[in-house]
Image (tube, rainbow, N blue to C red; front, side):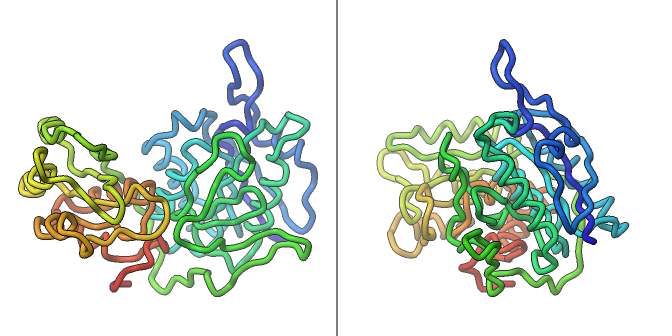
Amino acid sequence: MKKILLLSTGGTIASSASDEGLIPSLNSNHLLSIIGPMSDCEITCEDIMCLDSSNMQPEEWITIASRINDVYINELYDGIVITHGTDTMAYTASALSFLLTNISIPVIVTGSQLPLQHPLSDGIDNIKLAILGGCEESLKGVFIAFNRKIILGSRAVKVRTTNFDAFESINHDEIAIVNGKGLQINHSLLNKPVKPYYFYNELNTSVLLIKLIPGMNPAILDLLMNNNYKGIVVEAFGAGGINFIRRDLIAQLEKMVSYGISVVVCSQCLYENSDFSIYQTGQKVLQHGVIQALDMTSEACVTKLMWALAQSNKPEDVKLMFETNYAQEISLTSKE
């Protein structure tokens, strides 16, 4: 019989009504009692925090990853399920993908758009899917289970605020779906770790995500340099456009790189990849040492940059890490 560890962290799925709105309050045993018995697996419950996911930050990611590492290295469970709020779920799943590099059991994050106590909650189906996914030996790595889909943690983005179909897999097909035939896993998409597992217990939080708008004053980036930021992710226009006429953002980014700050540029567009070779503006950026994120999500860029900077402050090292695929977070790469 498969052994599953259910880690509760709070979120909408564990929330109850209060005078101040929904507040996380249910523990993991209460969640499991609502779900009901699951055949063919033994579930152990553990509460490691009880937070609205808006308060879920890098320190909490380390706490969750550390607990997973403890049980993984002692081979206590066949799979791990994490209940989590939806607002920052994609960030947490992405961060865990890097912190738990090459983990060879399924780590599946799930939650709900309606509290589990609500009679129409989507949480029951989501947790059941996550538990069933946690029993699958073929799933190795970090995933999100939501609305009858299992998607890579490093490719997930929350795209809807209230619809049950809250998450999409960006630039990568879904790993599994549920239909009339049950759980259908696309085995051709599964990661098969060939390198050893490694647990990273540190992130560099001196990272900021900026979305470009027409007319942005480049001087705003001086504030980042003056406040000791080590990395910046820039959501550029289209395939990687950055303005340099009248307000020269490219020169400012070059200045940041010269100061030893790692600058990663991705696209504001959810789908397809950035390509700096297409336009003059993009080629100018590449000439100055900026890192292009290709088809990575913003969530993956931010968490990977935090993870990379915890290992090295050298921009050349960070660039090499961004050119390497660790958790299927990037598909258009020449280095594996």
